[in-house]
Amino acid sequence: MLLNTINSELYRDLPPSQIVPRLADEGVYIASESTIYRVLRQEKQLAHRGQAKPRKHKKPDSHIATSPNQLWSWDITFLPSQVRGLYYYLYMIIDIYSRKIVGWSIHSEQSAHHAANLIEQACIDEGVERDQIILHSDNGSPMKGATMLAKLEMLGIKPSFSRPSVSDDNPFSEALFRTVKYHPSFPLTDKFETIFDARVWVIKFVAWYNHTHMHSGLKFITPHHRHTGTDSIIMPKRHNVYLQAKAKHPERWSGNTRNWQLPSVVMLNANRKNRSCDRPLKGSEMAAA
Image (cartoon, rainbow, N blue to C red; front, side, top):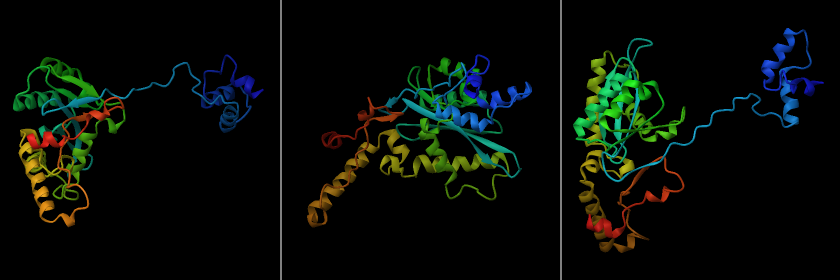
């Protein structure tokens, strides 16, 4: 009787949580929700019962950067204020190839208008031309707002979006915000008294991050070095230092010297087909750099 009822034309598209109260409204009780779920599981009918199937979100397209100002990522995070429930919102854009912060702003609310202004200013500061940038972000309303999308179209920027609620699709911005909030000077207890204080702190942080911070993802050069191409001078010098050290004391080395080569290609959301593109420079390329 139970299977006949829940598979009838009236109830076959409904989950047990909908069937049980509807039967109760008709003065009928045949089993609890948990019993119905158990029976459906035993009969291998525990699938999506409605006509509307769960929406599938494919992994976003992979993108490749071979130099600065080709592929940017941006996001928004909150900064704590001294007022309970009040936050300041930090908008930040990072160049995926060089890890340089190319733009930021702080506001008291999240807005597509603020985001559009920030993107435009970053393009001016970096001298970006039309059809030069791919801009990746998550699916928040400031990212997909009409003002923002119109600005991207005007600037000739191609938008790219993560899957809903999948932070791994935007790993560079996530990693940047982790660095922001784990910086020793980040106010964990005192918090920011005013939005002006927050802006002053971020000015200092960005200067440190771009020009002083030796980025582990860049084999310990600064984003500024990578962005300006100075890494092509620094890395061969490091390589030669290690070669000379090995030649002087070969007994200290059991194999090759430390690899100071940086990838010639950086990828966002790599798939199996193009994962091999993310490769380090060959020795001959390193020497010529």
